[in-house]
Amino acid sequence: MKRTLPNFLVLGSVLLFVFGAAAQAADPLPSWNDGPAKTSIVEFVGKVTSEGSLAFVPESERIATDSGAQPGRLNRAESMR
Image (cartoon, rainbow, N blue to C red; front, side):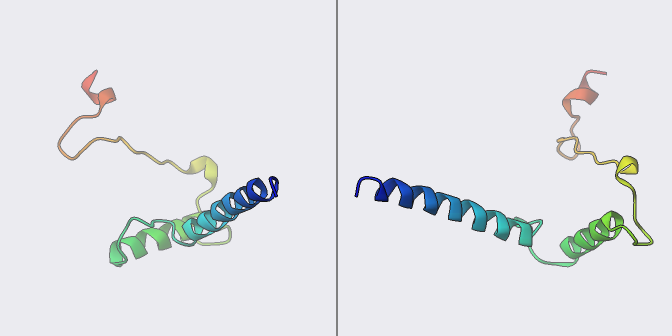
């Protein structure tokens, strides 16, 4: 009986992790409301990351940025210049 509870807890944790990851993978932007902006972004990323697509961009040529700055404010790197 002593081993049953820990085994149950481990199994429950694994199931939560697996199903949580699957649910997150189903919606790439879970915190966004459904709408035209979200749809456009998801479709664009799908096109540029799918080999064989006319809009495909190889990984070596992709550039992504996130300054972390709020609109109208400089981020740390910009404020040091």
